[in-house]
Image (cartoon, rainbow, N blue to C red; front, side, top):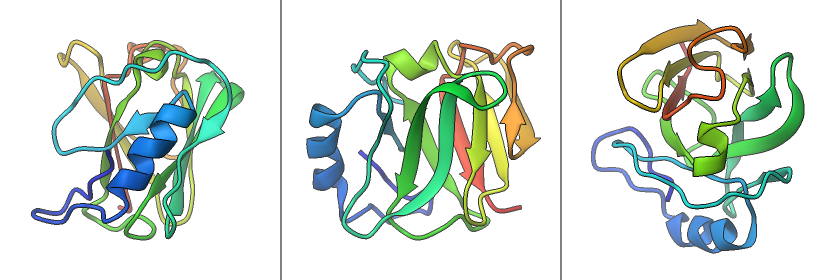
Length: 143
């Protein structure tokens, strides 16, 4: 499910994302707290609600190559509050670079174990860091 990182605001299109998640993988879910996904297909895909905005694109290889997935938000492009996402199980162990879209120019990555996090300017290729194929949570915003 996709939720805005602002307190008390839940995306109206959450049902659309649930239906899309069943039909398309790999997927991502956004939430204020990390939740595990259960999709494992490495095909290129994206999730989008009726009124959604591309926030970023995830790539399976460093240098913005390989399998990719467009990640969308229901409340327009990034602002200072941003959006938070828990990658599907497949993306948690395959993500190596990210490109931002619109005003999304900052990202904070947290490893799967939750023991390390770092903030980067977008785009970022993190294939040589602890986060290569080890991303448990992604927060993107305008900063």
